[in-house]
Figure (cartoon, rainbow, N blue to C red):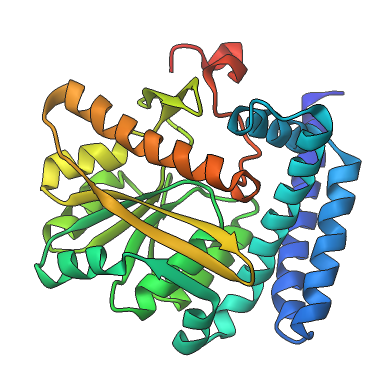
Length: 307
């Protein structure tokens, strides 16, 4: 297939996906929740059965989280992970219409006092998150609890879909910076932190050439250096924040602060501390790790070597 044809197909697929997301937002808020949940579960099972590169990558990643799983157990885990992922989307579709009280009904938070104490002391804080549970619901809880946050978002295609996601996150109280196309993000994040602000960053997958090698789930992987670097540069407190589904609610944990260390070795040690927390939490609830992309060094394309 010629490159122009592949590009046309990719553009068409992006338009279809964008339309599906918009339809989800419009429908989920008007249909009874049990019907939405049932439809999402059915869709998750269909996507799992259909397979494809994303499902294969999810299964491969989950095999690192549960290395002793039999093939049948891994199949069931991959299906459950897709159900968890579609549950995330169902909550995202409904979230803009929910009040702060409704958000509190959806989420239980372990050790919120750690974040509140930092806020009361005027300290900047950085939460590093894995792609687990529902990070948008975590953000909504923070904003409704007096902890408005700034984050960075990868640009989506088509542009209209990206704009709608930004509008959604801004509606629930977040300040969203684009990963690309609007100047460097690090200076703006640092300024926000020095003023006592709160920054949340997804941190279990490196999307740059500057990631740091870590041990994640017993294998070599690369994670972004940004959270640790911002802590070094600004004096803000760095901690991991994770979430997993616990029955009908999302359970979020504010973990203990990561000690700040200086220099390149310090960056490596701080990032490994985050990776250790992520490893523990992913193994606790592997079905809630929604990772359909390459994470581990052994899976990286040849063109990505050396990054």
